[in-house]
Image 1 (cartoon, rainbow, N blue to C red):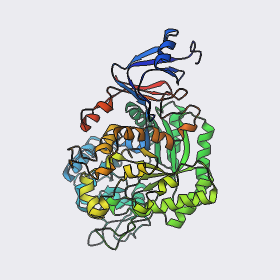
Image 2: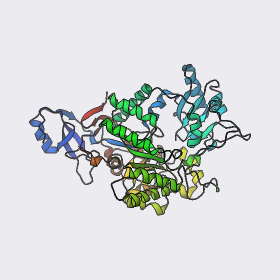
Image 3: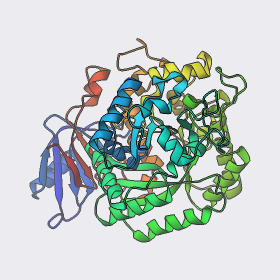
Image 4: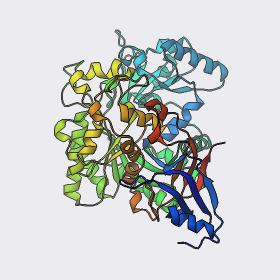
Length: 549
């Protein structure tokens, strides 16, 4: 035990304390000294009799390892609150009205930027610029769809970007058009979206730092202490560095620097320099150890890369953002430089290409503890299921997506067909083969509230409890499996076990990364009741980062 006479000490008791370790019984008390767990149960209570710790009474609540966010976009998420609130809109007319309302209240804003609209509200996810023109015609409008792979613009935005009937189809993108060749107003995937983004003014650094602070504070209120930012561009690094220097990070953050196929391999020195900049900063909450690859797009755009053609278009397999040989070479290069890879894989062809790239890197660079991550993993060919465990690949899934909601039934299922649709998100199957499963939300693409995802992971049902037995019920997880994916699973992804003070489970010597819930999720009366659980307090290495007001 540490001498706690000059250190901050905490005793937590009065409820169930779940360690997150298989086979462990609940604890009744835990002692924390200077941010480190030092004792449990009788030993903790006895220690407290000879010291004067801060005493936290759980009042019948539940203490558990803090959550980890395995895949998110914190800056995008926080900035959504600064524009028209289109996420809550359930019709195109509501979106147009909200854009008009916001524009009228902000007459001096040059560009009207908003997110995230529901792509299922228009046939095939195609939205017309003229609909937005009805709300705002004299200023440019750009709205991002819920998946952030698509934008919907008004005519003014298209004009400023120089997108016309004579514009060629961009590399790695698509410009849907009207019958006369004029751009419709929907821009799909990188090459097309970037045509608009290139003319959007950059927000000032201080505004983006405020947004990042808002994002990490929000995550702390949900019980999180670690976030994987899964899409970091060069300008974003300045935001993180400024926030860290100003004491404005409420969670640990690891940056995944995006590898750009159009700038590869010339981009590699830039990625190495970015990592070195973060290393030199020596900030305890900030790392940049990961490289993000987008292997493909999304099913809703018919840009996910599929082994067999789309059911809705028998001549189309989707879009490979990186060709297999190029992806393999780039993964090998960043792996040789000691980076972890984090690869967006939606379609089964993208999954196979990513697994092949990881296999090649392992063969050429030798064995090491690399923990590559495939994220989303929506569709996996059965032949590739065992390869995740064999290659040590971590499955980072967004459990909230594994339900038959409108996006699934209106856009996804018609594109994939019934047989492939029922093979989506094989979470239990992958876990049962020995693969490590970690959870994330892809916020703001979907809610970061962990128990919303856990409800779906354990039921495979919509909020209306449909289907009755769950969609693909063999892929349901138990509650403790789902909790572990959001704690120990993410900790494994983050190499937390190699830290000086590990986190992700509660053990003596581990960092006191803790979430205090108002009730025990294992005793929830229903799946919906899980989503009503509230976080009372959050600690990061023993430092309180959130407390219920």
